[in-house]
Length: 65
Image (cartoon, rainbow, N blue to C red; front, top):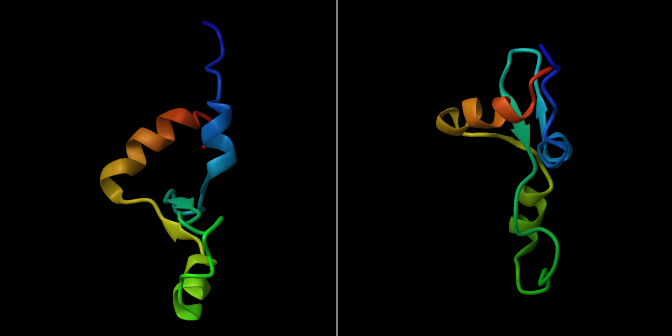
């Protein structure tokens, strides 16, 4: 049986934690930043977890996770 290929776009966007949860970066942090408040920009810097409903779909992209 052949190896399962990793989805490369998913591998660049997501990381799996030691507990099996999926980590992601937040959206809306790339441009048009001058209209956003400092508090909002500060909160966009931190990574967050993928919702539980979506994590199985993401894990299928990352077979070695």
